[in-house]
Image 1 (cartoon, rainbow over the protein chains, first blue to last red):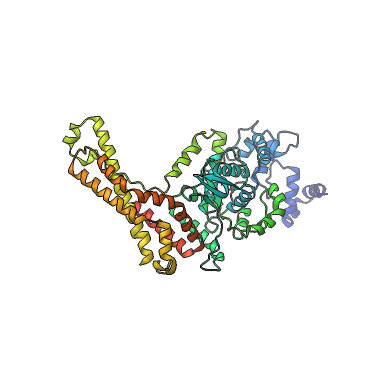
Image 2 (cartoon, rainbow over the protein chains, first blue to last red):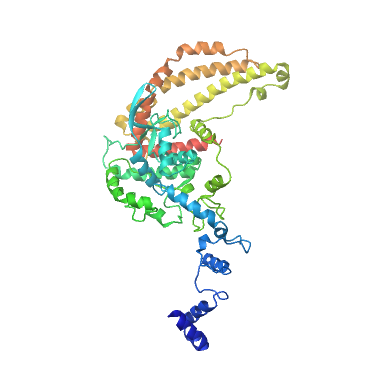
Length: 392
Length: 105
């Protein structure tokens, strides 16, 4: 009908109908000579596909068009150039799509708490109840977000422990990818001294997270943005926070949809425990660009997936990386200050007069001495800045 | 809010003792050791030895044993207070910022 009408318009009275009804005029022209006119409202991507497939008589869908055969691919349409690869990438992504939207800490935290196995384990002669070990934690997080990159999973885990979701049983280090390190979930200890503070809990945690962020010195929390400060491109991000136990009406993935029935029940149980962490792990957010996929490099240099894409397309991350990170964390809380070297503290003649071996020995002795000075200074700091103010 | 109100007065002494235990003994032991080492370093440009000083100090190291065995209890008390007392939690965070700031100098 449209084509008949359009043809009638075109051949009959093009001038009047064109003036009176621009819509029908446009559509009429498109139907007859689509190669010369622009469709009124179309995505550029579709138009390109049309234009390129024009030379071929078959009506092939845009994603399967082996475009770029006739013309060199336009740099601004990476989608067209890589379309065959992209479709395989999508299949892979569908096969290992994350269990929850991985950028939302609350979702990951909940999935993690539901999956991790708690047991009683001993360490250093003490038995800890309801604990899990670091390697298992990283395993589970990697499974939840469907990554093979243990380092990424570890970073996400640290984003969770930065909000005190769980802590080392000895309270003295962050999450490590190590079976010997034990962790337990944070539990809200009902205060015997005051009541009605549970409501404030959540605020405190958020404030803590925010202050950690502001310091910016902890590399993990730097990647986490609080809800208020992050302009998130995707709609489902917004639904994740604010309300911790939001029933996930806007589920980010089909697998999540399947789970959403149980989601609410779990959430009700969860209210008995400590509140879940909240925040966005920006490394794992989706890109705002609809052409961006996991497996090829996004055109945007600010794309949150760019690092992941680079490592996927160019090189695999070196296997030794995760250990380095773990070792770094051991020194997180150690205040180190380079002491002045012995060699700088004595006159040059004396330095010249001793052997190389003696120089090394003097540096070692010097290190013993300044380490002791630092230690005493730290203790005095504790006494004067941390303890005394409590009694003042 | 005054800092001294962070922990209610009736359990303040006990809390500080549980968390910091015998830190004053440790400071005393190490201050003596530090002074002896400093004195040795000031007396000689090329220090012959420090082992004798350490040997003298080690018999007085028993506070470390006591501290170490109580450390986990202290950590537990500390974390418990932090999670049940928002005022204390804020106090700890402010102090942490101070530490960070002082590290720059």
